[in-house]
Image (cartoon, rainbow, N blue to C red):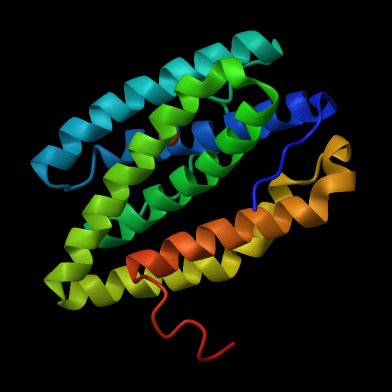
Length: 195
Ligand SMILES: [Fe+2]
């Protein structure tokens, strides 16, 4: 199900997307100091440039000050956990990018960038899971923990008053979409047994 929101939500959606992008940017910066495979490092450098360009564009649109002062997110050191962590922010950012393009079709290129980012991490996580060793198990455990926290993360993102009339639908659409994504990748195996 896709949701098209009215223009009154534009500012709130921009702000939410900006927040997810800023978190992704800070995580990507920290991640480059970790031990990651060389092709991942090359992607992260390009990725950082994309996120920086998005941030500048959104800050200009919002007239908002930089998010650089925000507390940097804690970034895990093992690659399998880091991949899940970055993927989570990207998947959430993509959901807001989709909603944003509904009210601002002129921002379609940003949605395309986000699809590339999410696709990259899906490929990396697919490789980790295919390895089938402790890393695969670790990635599944990290994903399950992240997914269990996701409803409260989404609630925080949907706090703005302008989103109130659509909050329940937005929550469902975002959670369903991300849950389907994680299931398709094979990250949530066993996660529904204990629920
Ligand atoms: Fe991104």
